[in-house]
Length: 342
Image 1: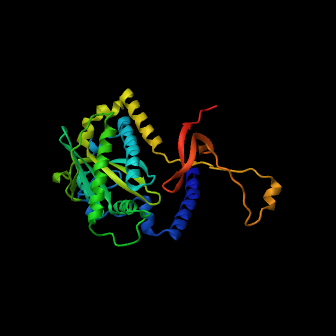
Image 2: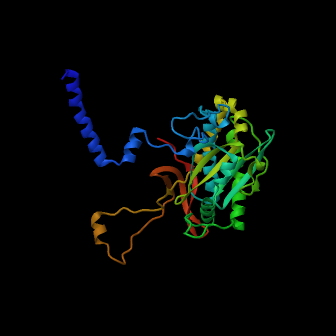
Image 3: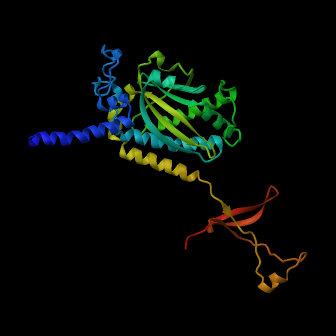
């Protein structure tokens, strides 16, 4: 026997042994699937599903607008940031509480797909962009509307479990009309440093009435989360891709420096002046010894002399000198002068 025949006989045994082990663990169909030698369904031989199987070629349209928004648009980021800051003030004035508004993802979708994703009910408002022949849309689902209206009327903005598949009530529709009016006003101001956009009055639309029936229109949808403390919600802003593409040079360049600086200072001042701070003042006091303190009993009197001037403090820091007194039957302090820093 030659050397090659001996090697063939020695190598055959491990292969057969491995096949036996595989056969004892896997079925014939599973072995065929691993080897890629399984039977091919006759339905796939007609070529009608070419491009769907793994390894086949898929058509890729580079002219499709949904493929072109890959670059970063710093101007759009600044618009979203300014809009969130403005909406925090809007919600604060409407609901009487601190509300956090943050921007989420921005996605591209077709108008038809976007409208079919709406839950029931959904609030839809549209504004025409003057001189641009386009419209922008604000959408909000029922959970967001219920939470905001509940907070508006003094509730905890946490809706109790209930059947939500109903039309909005008159109060809910009026609240959303009021919110949409202020929302698009803030959006107009947020766009001002980038490009002057003028919006017409918002109009209420039915959930399927966007885009005048153009289901193939590409839309840019930006999501915004609202923290109602407690409770939360989300609303969307949608604009046609054609409008965003026309504004791309402004969005790529970013906001104009001096104008953006003025707007930033104004937003910062508005946020700062809107903060709530706790003030306190000690109208009177008396000094006694520790022995006198221990000797006090119920019914004892402590002589207290009124003070002519008191300090109005914030976080234990004196801010104003005031004169104690009464106003409308309540203790009050009349501001005399500002405390000077030492």
